[in-house]
Length: 241
Figure (cartoon, rainbow, N blue to C red):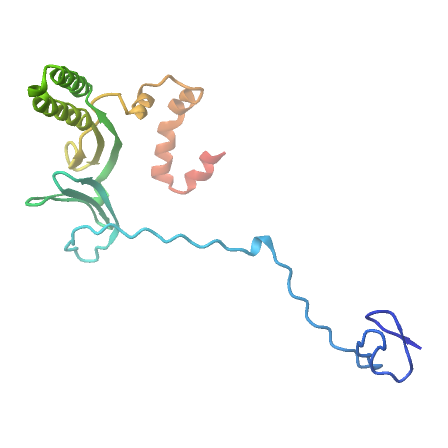
C-alpha cells in the first residue's frame, strides 16, 4: 500500500492518481521532476537608477595645440545684466579663462606646468550704506504720500528708487586667482573679493582662534609638503600612520 506524497492518503495498488487529491503517483525508479523554485527576492538586489550626469558647459571653441586635449571646462561666472559669461578651461597643457559679452571678449591663460597656487572664493557682498539710503528714501516716500494727492506720483518714484537701491545692495561675489611660478602676481584673476563680512561667514575662519591641531600642523606641515613633492605616493604611507 502506497501513500500520496501530496496529501498523505492511501493509494490502492496499480493506481496512477491519488483518489483524494488527484496527484499523479510516482513510478518506482522514475521520480517526477521537481519544478524549479523561484529565487527569493533580495532586498540588496535592487539597483537604484543612476541619475543623469549634468551636461558640460558649452563654452567657446578653442584652437588646441599639438597633442593638446580639453580635460575640464567650467562656466565659472555668469552675469545677467549686462549679459556675459566666463569659462575656465583646463587642458593637458594650459589653464585658460575665456570671457565673452555682447560686444567684447577677454582671454587669459597660463601654462599648466607653471601653476603654483589657486585662490577661489564665493559669497555675498552686502552694501550696508546702500541699504540705509534705500530705507531712508522709502521713508521719505511715505512722507510725500501724506503731503497731498499732488505728491503721490513723486512719492512713488522715490519709493521705487529706494526699493531698487536696497535690492541692488545684495550681490553675489565670486573671485578666482591662479598664480604662476613664471609670472609676477596672478596671470588669471576673475571677479572681486568680498567687501564686508556681512553675508560672508566663511571669512571668519581666516581669523579664528587656534585649535588643538594648530601646533601639530605648524610643526609638521613643511616636512609633509616636502615629502609629497619629492617622494610622491611613497610619502602617503609614511604620513598616514
